[in-house]
Length: 284
Image 1 (cartoon, rainbow, N blue to C red):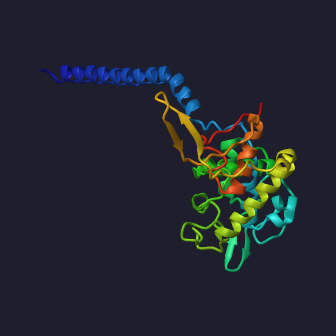
Image 2: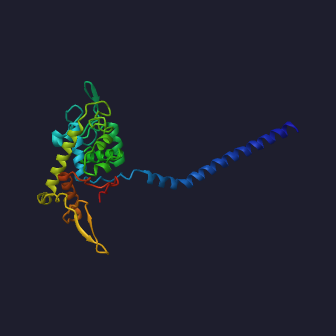
Image 3: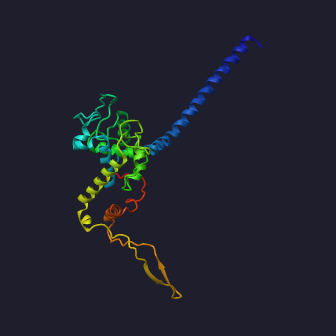
């Protein structure tokens, strides 16, 4: 075979190779284009459902938010607590997180707001919830987002401040104690009993303000030590049921939670709120 023929064959093979590579890239491009709608749909489904919505702030949730503020040292300043920088000084621009590092020996921090958000934590919550500012409502929503992120919102909805609830929130707020009673980050920490006391008082006061009629009526009667009356069976033999009973007055669904709360406070009953999914409600 002559050199010219070899060269021609090489050029032909090279041309075929280029066309083959082009065909492969074209095929990949077509596949990607066909998968684009599916990819967009997947992204839409995986974006947190929290975006553009609000958490419903129930009395137990508000009591927990206030307890976090108490633990973080911003509760005593009232509404100004939403403007507190680390160390106690105030800022005034609530259009955004101040992102200002304060040095107070032996700590330095850029935490700010009622719940002492770090800048990185705030950016995460802001993006997830599509928050537009650093106003009190936005801070409340961001705090509830962090509670849910720590898988503690279901516990919060029970209406009881438990050691497990404090333990789950300890990595987020260093002033909350772990099961061992210490700070997760080795910083100053509030005692569990002091947080529980504040929570119970705040929740009870909130219920008295929002449902004065039910509070005036008092809790349901206590457990009776008397057994149920004998029940007749088909063969006329009597049978006693020694299980204690509690007669709970009839109430609407809106009042039921309050009656359960009064019952729990008065008699140390079961959790006020049943285990509920960590859900949110829309703005509408």
